[in-house]
Image (cartoon, rainbow, N blue to C red; front, top):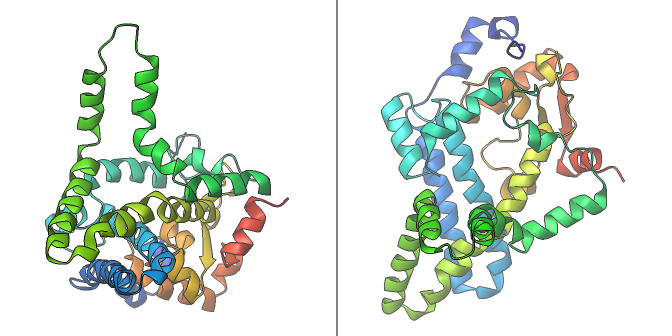
Length: 312
C-alpha cells in the first residue's frame, strides 16, 4: 500500500513562519528534559516532607515519566537538539532510552498512519469500546496489572509453557538480557535510594513509592489515555492527512496530570512531524487563524475524547 498522504508546509505557512516553526533550538529541548526531572524530584521531595501528598506526587511523577517518553519521541524525530549525536545521547541516557529502535518503528507509524502497515494500528483498532471495558482497562492500569503484563508477562508465559523437565534458569536469563535496561536502571535507582537512606532514613521507601509506584500505576493509565486521544476512532485508511490523528485541547490540570510537553497537539505533529513539540501550540494557533483547524480532528479535553472512544 502507498504511504499515507502528506501535507506541504508551504500550503499553510509563509516561508518566515515555517522557518520559525521548524527551527530546532539548541536549548529549549534540553530545558524540557531538565524541567521534567526537576518536576520528578520536586514532587518526590514534597511527598517525603509531607507524606500525605503521596497520591498527588504519584500522579505528577507518573505523568513526567510519560514526559520522558514524549521527549524521547521528539528525539526520534531529531527535534530535541539540532546536533543529532547530542539529540540521541540525551534521549538514550537522560530520557527513556532505546532511541534507535524506537525511531525505526515510529517512522513506520508516520509513513503508514492508520493504514494496515501502521505498527500502531492495533492501539486504535478496537475503538469504540464500552464504558465497562474502558473502566476495566483503567482499573488494570491503576492496580499494576498492565505494568506486570508488559514487563513480566512474556517470562511467566514462557515458564508456564516450558516442557516437562526443562530448566527454568536459561529462560529467566534470556528474559533478563532482553529487559536489562529496565532492570539495570531500576536496580541503580534502588541502590542510590538505599545508600541515601543510610544518611537520611526517611528515604528508605523513596524508590518504591516515588518511582516504581508511579511507573506501575499512573504511567500506564496516562499512556493509555494518550493513545486513545491520538488515534482512537480515527478512520482506518483515512485519505485526508488533516484527519490522521487527533488534537486534544488540554487545560492546565490535564497538562499537569495527563498530557505533558504538548503531546496533545498530535494532529499538528502528524502534519508536520519534524516540528519540535514546543512549537506545536504556535502551529495550532496559526492554523486556527486561517480556519484550517475546522477540517482537523480537534476535541476539547480528554473527557470529550473518552465519550467518543467509550460512548456507552
